[in-house]
Length: 146
Image (cartoon, rainbow, N blue to C red; front, side, top):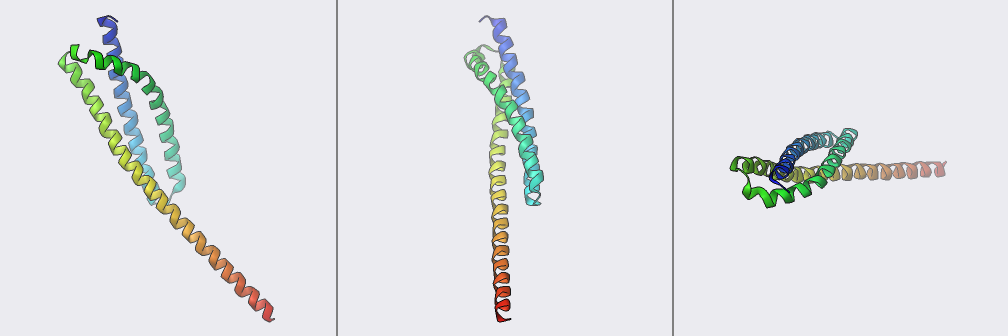
């Protein structure tokens, strides 16, 4: 691969990493909205956020397939690049890493909050079933006395 082709590939790697940053920021915002929806017990809104996040993640997954090859070129060639170019790409990769860490923490929180909400719902449903059985038994006893 000649210098011009390498520069084009690395330029594409940089542009793709910038696009990944945008997509991960969008996912992070949706995760925050999902968390608010869960806490407000608006599960329908939370599910919509999850669906939107999945669409964005699918885009990222496709992009990352191309990025694997471009990253190899970057790793091999980065020492030959101008310092400013290396810094731009390294900055993007650092930003991506930070976004992923933040997203992991928020997703764990969302999962825990959703699990807590479901546990509460199941507990309430269980109490409702028990109450219904008690009412039915009390009704049955009153009917037997008649």
